[in-house]
Amino acid sequence: MTKSPKRMYIIVAQIVMIIVSIFYLSACDTLYEQSGIQITDNNITGSFISRSGFEVMFDAHLTLYEAGESQIVEAKRKALTDNDITSMIHLCLGNEKYQLFKEWNISREGWAKKLARANEYANTEKTTQSYIDWLEDSLKKSSPVVTNTPTDLVDFPSNILNIAYVATDETADEIAKIGFVRNGEFLFVYYRDMFMDIVPESLTGMDQFDAAHETLEQFLRRRPDKPTISKDEAFKTAQKYSNDLGSDLELYLAEPCSILRNSAIDKDTGWMFTFTRSINGLQAIYEDGWTYVNPKAMPVHVSPWASEVLKISVDQTGICSLWWQGATLPQHENVKMVSIFPAGDLPKKISDSLYRIYGSHRNGDGKRLVFEVKTIELGISLISENNDRESAVFIPTWYVFLNRRWQGETEYLASDKLCLSAIDGSYIEPRMSIDDIIIEK
Image (cartoon, rainbow, N blue to C red):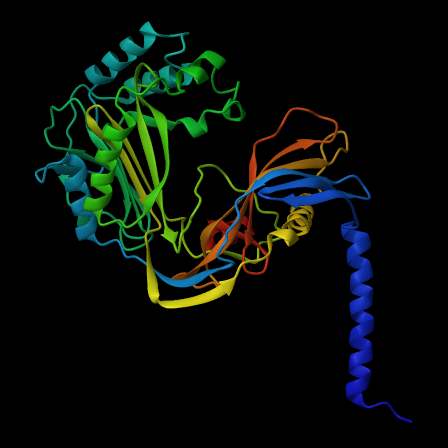
């Protein structure tokens, strides 16, 4: 009796699936020994260990979401017009009369003064040798007399990051620095002083220390001291700027920040406020830092554009810096309700995802990574479902915070974060955009 083509297709497909499954298990080594995984109240404990020693340990606080379901909300990219850029400059300066410059030239006398002051603090925690070297080089290239020619916003090119300088008075002590993209990505950056640097407390952990770049004393100098302005007073200022910008983002994080000028010679301590999107009681989680993607284990979805965030730093004088990127327009009329991926299935999903990303990693001694999951929090993230750069959706997302180290070691590597769709548990990376992924590939 002759088998029908349809039946033959089904048999062949089943055989292929079995072969693929066997190959996957042997190649990927994801046969885990589950050791005491328990979920009680708001905690997950236990571990998954693969047969070759790849280990994911859980002693994690879990933020539960009692509703059991959440929303998918469509979103559009917000445009940044020249009028928007002009209004933001007015707002940050507190003055509608200013001049815009493509570059700000400093005279030889000006560089000499900066260098002399820096040399007073050479070999101290207040300045680095690289800063002094930069000043010396700038002095050599400088002219006794300089001219700064004002320009107009329309003279800056589109679709690239432009750096400009803003002066309300050419003899002012502080020349502001701004960054923006015309007719492209939504990005506007402001610093009150062109030589100012803002260092939030979250970026001063010891994993940020690089002995090749600075001494330990210089690194610790950049850490915030006690703020010279109260948190409440500083927040009122930041909230006013957020409202005046027309932002509808909500406060995500408030932290002390160092306000440094001229390397770290001049230092004050204020507050940095980070605002992110909140939908249906869930908020987008944002952290500065780099993101790793394994080109052989790519996320299912990424963001269509840069993460939406507004950061404002404030000291006794007022606003120090403003950074607004990735502005988004939620389409609240286009909402879909979805069930939240069950917390009980998270440990296996987390372990499988980490293995696919890091399972092939070894150090010089051939040791594998051990992950320690510390916190699992439900929030939202913006992803592109169809690689569309102009539209996207906000979806509920499980954010997994973890530490990692090599087998047998006690010293941790940089902390990490894994993002999983809270709809189906798939690995997503909202911290990277479509363009970032193209560059990575």
